[in-house]
Length: 134
Image (cartoon, rainbow, N blue to C red; front, side, top):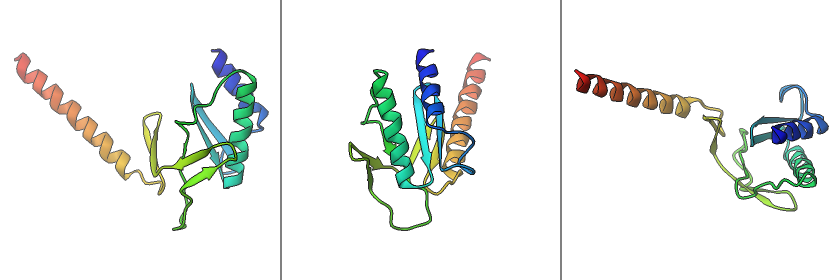
């Protein structure tokens, strides 16, 4: 509970309200899974650095090995990493956040295929169990 209160306090102190359609930055957070969304690379870097420094002041450490970034744009040239001055974040083309796949082209196709496959496996497992029980 302490961590959640602390995380919420950081988000409030960063002045993040509303959503990305009306703001330059947004934070999505659940437990210790945090996603920082920024309209520009510089906004993203600044928000991360502020978040990290406030966490350090409270005695929390940001795990740099788990930090990645996803660049959503129609441009063909994209940076392969983001450099904050203190660390570099590797670019990824997709990641899973709270069970949902997020990707660079905002496509739900892979997510839908994956959910159908999971549903099919569950159905076939249930069918097999039902047959074995009779």
